[in-house]
Image (cartoon, rainbow, N blue to C red; front, side):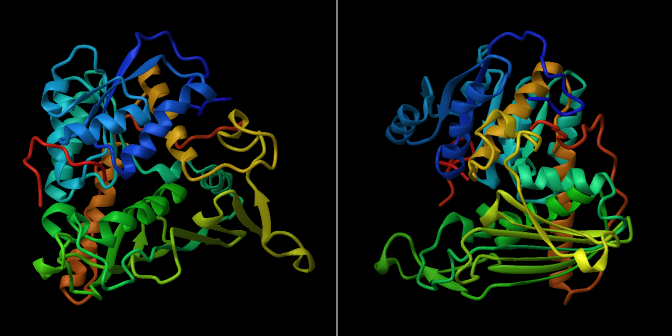
Length: 421
């Protein structure tokens, strides 16, 4: 497979990299699948799945045996002290991101971190500063906006960059789920502001906003937004006798973004959209063409070429399974589709190649900070009855790589990681 333009196809030899992962629930399972499979399909620097970290000794041992990790640990701090650990993959909830990531970077470990970057803007700024300092020492970091690695969205990025849409005028991005549509669904850490930071806003709007910025190569200059919580109390996870608990985060959010290019983007996210399971919908409209994508049909991209004669125009379906499409010559014959989990394998591939070549990967912590600034502005706007919020000019990331262009292809203690994000 041909690597992205900034990454040689044959990375220089590198000592075997030791990987430790913190957290082993939903995201830990997805990341473990990627680490387990990436070397079977891509040429990457040699590495080992060495340590899985979690506070429940029995649970982490069971997960390690299933997911292919050689050892387990219950304290992430001791793992950072090990010379045989080179990569820290953080899949713990957001309230632990800043503490673990900054400590890992200062310890000289490369860091892959699940999104969003942090629970607060102050934490995100501190993390971006730490990442920049670590990068100067050759220590790499990347935030896990995994949908950048969906081949259809990577192809959309290429088509936009090639000018096939002309001047982009507006974008619609909607990320809709329904796992909280039932008002009797019990409380989780994701519904408490102190542990989750925000609700649908940080959880899934972060993905939608990153796609807007990524696909267009753009920045936001103004934001207005609204958030809403439809179910304000939920049954305690401890059982009926524990009564109801207050939900302190949003169920849904809406935002309008003005972009530096002059385009306007609308973003809508919900975790109470009955019937929508995991639908990230993106529509991009330019003066020469348009694109449409839905994550629930992740192998398909719809493209309209407005330069064609009117009698021939219409959205056409591109089945993104050809070897000429991003990442796909590593997988199956044409027409044999891939799944949601493959984006994580592509993410592990890109991160390993970046480490092997000493090339800063993308999306960087600075990219994560850019998204965090927008999330904070949406919250600020919502609190002020959708007042328009101007964003300060962002500091340009250092040595940022382009997007993949592949022609062939109850809170625990602060030092105790929770089981997954």
